[in-house]
Length: 282
Image (cartoon, rainbow, N blue to C red; front, side):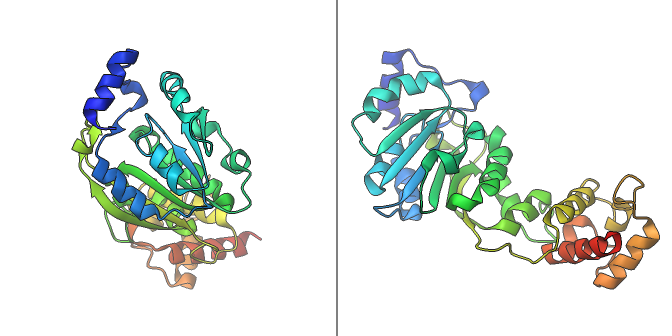
């Protein structure tokens, strides 16, 4: 569906995009085709689409996979799309918010599923976090997102954009930016450029750690004051009951330089610190 076809449909239905819903519809067929090639769908695969919109991706994905669940929050769009969706036996349109849906229960699939989404930028973080939480039934996630945010997810230690969300995503998945997408590929055109990000769920976390939640507590605390040396961010009376000197001992034991900033520590560094803290409080 190109821009002219989309506008004609909207005029017939009296539809207008809602800015508060972050609606930017993909209209570039070349970008659509590039996404489909990147996904390499198989005939028996199950796909969940986040933000189906007017089906720019939906119908072509349905031709390539065994079952497609297209999730769309906007009730107006669902009303317009429902008659078209009825023609495709393997395509199910679900009116709802992806953040409220249990994907694993929704699909009931024995095999792991693929997730694809063109999502509003303002819910990127909660969607990513939800995909990670439900990783037990997911093989891969392909998300069209703001290029700047994707750079954060794939960044390495030492990068100015490396942060707690980078650590979280890279602990559970292999993240890769596949290609960039110009803002003119959407209507209405957003203010920033986008990209297609792929997250492949890892069979095991990327590093070994005894207590995952403890490690992420340390990571979040360290990045809460990211411009400070990490030794100055962690020692607080209300955090793990571990004072500055104890932290110095822990850093020394783990061979991690306490004068570094949070962004300079790798996941392996944080895992060693976490295990050392856990051993002291056991």
